[in-house]
Image (cartoon, rainbow, N blue to C red; front, side):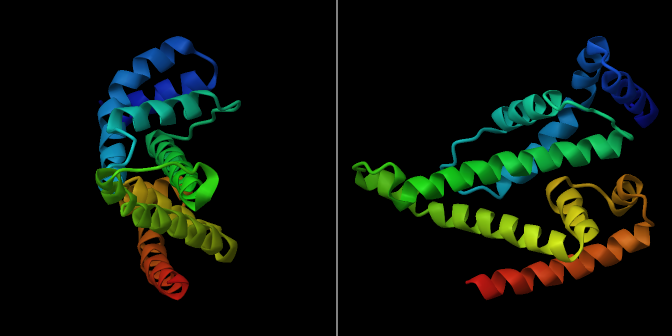
Length: 188
């Protein structure tokens, strides 16, 4: 569906129209699924979330927001990607707290194999913490990473959401990628 139609439905939903929300969901579901799939590919095998569950959790988080002032389609997908990231990071943190003795229990040898995937949870939490540090240095660059890496938005879409030029989005992405690689290397 064309962006102006989606943008109009987002505006109507922001103004409280439940009908607009009901009409919007089928139009954006496939793109939300693509964002969720990108996230899920980065998850360790044996993770507990399914793509559909992540989409639904993100939807609930978006629908529960008190104030929904969507600028346009790209803004909506950027916020949806951010919601998915937070859900997965919270899940990873929960697993880490259990790993560190929060819920001690016996496990079998086959369950032991799944425990090795907790290293991936450490990596997810480390990336989230590095993104938070980047946001302190430069909030816009942190948002560019979220929108590009997690949301799968193009430089043009990022520029539209953040009200910057596509070239600035490209430069911010290059800087942020280098900065994050250095930060993650220093935490190992």
